[in-house]
Image: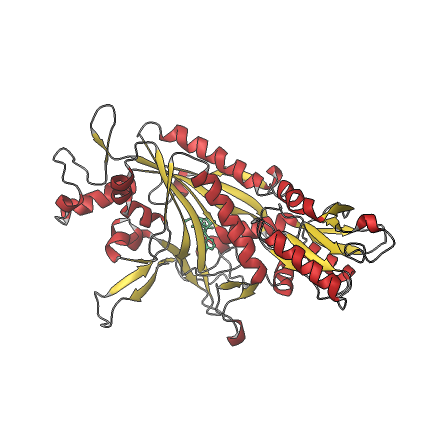
Amino acid sequence: MPAQSMDEIVSLCKRRGFIFPGSDIYGGLQGTYDYGPLGVELKNNLKAAWWKANVYERDDMEGLDASILTHKLVLRHSGHEATFADPLVDCKNCNSRWRADHIGGECPNCGSTDLTEPRPFNMMFKTVVGPIEDEESYAYLRPETAQGIFVNFKNILDSTSRRLPFGIAQIGKAFRNEITPRNFIFRVREFEQMEIEFFVKPGTDEEWHQRWVEARLAWWREQGLSSDNLVPYRVPTADLSHYSKATVDIQYRFPHGLEELEGVANRTDFDLGSHSKAQSELGISAKVMENEDSTAKLAIQDAESGKWIVPFVIEPSTGVDRGVLAVLSEAFTKEKLDSGEERIVLKLKPHLSPIKVAVIPLARNKPEITEKAKAIKKELQSAGFGRVFYEDTGNIGKAYRRHDEVGTPFCVTVDYETVGKSDKPELTDTVTVRDRDSMKQERLHTGELAQYVQERLK
Ligand code: ATP
């Protein structure tokens, strides 16, 4: 049985140390969450899987890590200062504030329909840069990582000699002053994005758009999301962002409903074009590109014709936090055991599991067993497949329950037989390995362990 409600996931996340409300001891800061000991592992594993698939396993991608603090001109010429706004309404009865397009004309707090006219509310966080606070000293916390890619387009081109088509991938924080953050980590004010700007020849953009939608759906399935819960949705023209010619949202069936997990947009030449135009107008074009032939500054020379062209851009953009919520919701399972007991088990894909192996000494007060368990832990840790955990905090049943709940694919138990203190000397240096999903146990030689685990983490 999957999760019945968001509450079950929120509660597991807090209980086991995945995710806590931000600034918790002071009552929380709305729209912020902190990732705990297991959350940080899960999040890092998801980001690593994305980076591996999109950067390492392709030959047409470069990576980038641009700064969060962003010059106001970048976000002016990208169109964000003027248009990155949500429609805000006030309820005249209870004074609460809402996003007009989320509430259907009725205050969710008191039910009143006496609302103000919607007015645009810009979602960017402004901050002061430097010691003097005046009208001009402000900058923004970036509302998307994408602009960092566009402003580095020339730097990357010049330092890598790429030809079209190629992409730039980035993972990093983004900030939006959402009017009503809600649904746990689904809609927050500080979040992380995994974005690709994929530059293509104009005219090939529609084909590449389609290819990326398919590639991204396939990747999410590899992270364990089922096809039934992944629903592509072509955004109607009237709802497109200011930069988009076409967008396909990859929606996921979250516990609170079917909502956007990723947007794959055809951003055309909007961003490179508009930054190029701004460069010319501001008179800084010569510094950006010396070549006389170029009419546009953030352009690339076509290998065949030698002409300078502004590429079109396909942008697959997803939120790490929404991804974490999706894989947690999909993995959360309640099972009735033959004994009549219920167990909660997180059936995460092993490569995403925060802990890959728990090594459990059967007796906590027998040094020969605990020392052996620690040695096995150390050896497995050095195999390099992720976190291995020495678990001696409870009895074996409790340890299994805890590791089922946090999605640990393998539990290794070290017992009297392992250390040769039993009437079965042939079992010396063997351990019991328990599989999370089948709960089946098998006896393996310690020397086979690392390979056994490695093979099953893919
Ligand atoms: P929504 O319509 O849900 O507000 P959006 O269309 O504004 O999202 P994009 O600008 O396309 O979102 O951002 C790309 C991705 O970044 C989204 O698919 C989502 O996964 C993530 N994202 C955007 N806003 C938030 C947020 N407030 N909290 C968490 N993730 C977010």
